[in-house]
Image (cartoon, rainbow, N blue to C red; front, side):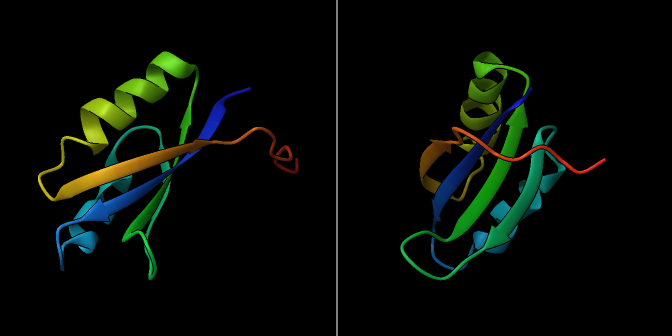
Length: 82
């Protein structure tokens, strides 16, 4: 079963839409701009922790307008219906 994580992203002002375009990154399943403490939420699925690390640190955090990220690894999520 893949690892699912939610990456909470703080961006430079007015740039969250550019970060949300990261949904094109392999492993990113969903990306939305949001109101609140963070500017965007990105849902990532990876086969293991090493792949998750690569997606978060080498792809998402390297985007030029990303200021800070916080990653929440999901402990449980229901299986997809058949």
